[in-house]
Length: 337
Image (cartoon, rainbow, N blue to C red; front, side, top):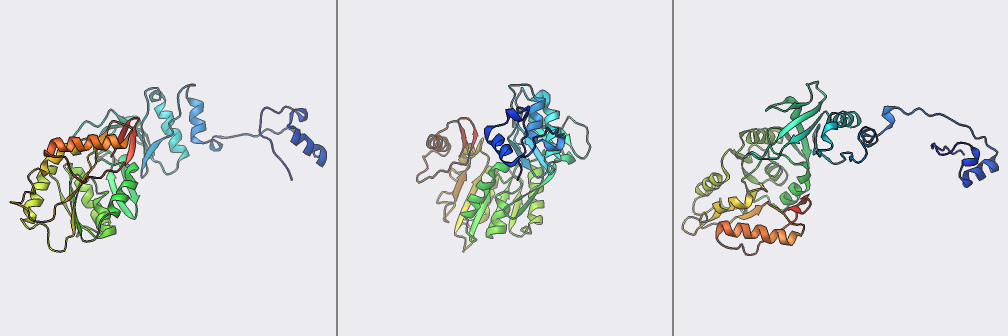
């Protein structure tokens, strides 16, 4: 039986805690001083970074991983230390080969943002602003039995939506038809085809997204179940309605699910449904729409009401029987629904 005390507070036998001194007296053991040399490998990421940051600056502890890529959201006070933070992160998390932080916010149609590469295991110069096709951002993610390849600098991807991808896909049936209007690289489309067996029509305006969507369909062996389009969501819906004809989708299709996963503006796109399924052009079953949106409130019920009102302004009527689901907190007093 032995006990090791690793503390600078105990200078000699008399300074030991009473229970330890009682143990020493009872067993007649000897108290000795030992110097333990701790190396870099003995410390965690948080412990090392804390030593390099001034007091009052928090250690970045929350980050998104996309395969071997770590995506940080650094505050202004942390930015001067970003290269140290990235180097320690790469050292302490062996699976991470590239560390980056976004520069600015998403302000373009394709939902991608400018990024600064802070650490690159391949050996590229850092820091650098990532250019289109930067090889350090070429990565692979696996979710629920599906493989997704992408260049994170060219497409939109959010690993924090993994459970939402799983939840929605789990509601589909094999006989359902999926119209994924803002499909990205396929986080809904690919598992709907692979895991459920649905016929999927997947669309995205970003040609790099649809490039990787096709790559991912082949990688998951569902290219025969997924048709890929590179169109505006409104044009995609118009073409799907025309392709189906007045009687709607083929016999045996039990439901159509329209997915609109563009949270910043999805409610604005719902105007494309206005008049699209009038009795004069469509006699089939009406589609069920899954509209993702942000709302600036911490109360999900208030958020849902606000989003439904935005949709009503676009389609001219308040949707009856609509249900809502809270996806995640995006920021303080901002929810994704």
